[in-house]
Length: 89
Image (tube, rainbow, N blue to C red; front, top):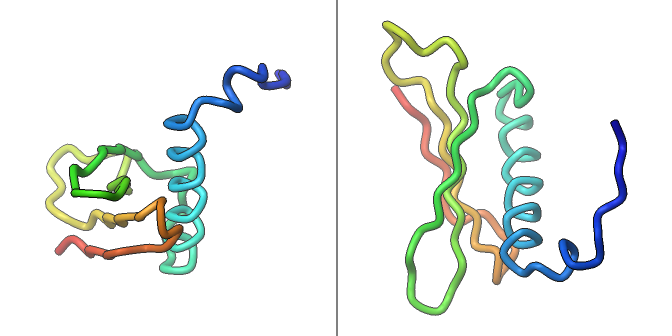
């Protein structure tokens, strides 16, 4: 089902920031071999002075009895770049 975003949504700074961060992280994750559509994705906002950093975690959907293997990408949305990439063991 397609729908058009209301202008209020497009003016929500947090929503736009998060969408940009996810798009940047998805591109990097795919380049590292992660199948994004098959991943369980969790997102947290990291508190840092003077910048907006989103931490995006890609893990397996079936994570029971599994250890590690996650990919974590931190995106600084103010600078629109990836700060750090963590590979789980």
